[in-house]
Image (cartoon, rainbow, N blue to C red; front, side, top):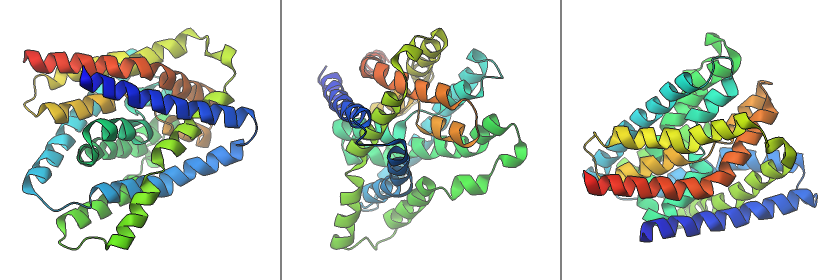
Length: 305
């Protein structure tokens, strides 16, 4: 119960920050262009700095092994998400399929997991983040373009998040660490992730007219993203030997709302941007209830097996 309480409080705080973003957008203190610029700041600078900061830790073999296990669990979880997206969503609904396998682990999952488990848990969460990022920039791009030529492993590897991860790993295994001043700079930039990301999410929600949320398909896809997929991941992970903490990290990541990249790529490739933004917004609101619920179910499953 204490764990669920911690998560609920963190999500409540994040929802308050989202309200700040909604108000700021409605009052025209933040424009559409400003929202895009803040998103670019998050993706290109803040996210890599988060990754580098959490990997500024002494090399320990046990951490390396657990990171490998987290990668394995993440591959399983993302595989389950992709399989269900193909089963539950019609083939011509590309935005919805992308939304099901790409949760908002970077901007939503990191602050939740960091608040509950600390920075070491974020260290392991990066296994999930990198897995979904690689899938998003290969299979995900194919969903939006229907062109195999558009699938680019190079683009997947050279995106800021993956580069930050590779630099972080190099610093982790190296005896050389960032000097104190540089580390302080990196952690300072990384610390703005939660408030900035939630404010940007608020502008996404404010941008969508309230009446347009009354759409059965939106509720159905949000239910798949927030309930069906996490339950399936919990069921599959129950049969895999791993620590309860690593499983919980993957379950929370799998329970996150639809990722903002769903809307960003939809806009870039002109693929129903409005629907993508609505899915990001609606699932984010509902996740305040569903994430604690999935955590409670995972906790129960862990006690029974």
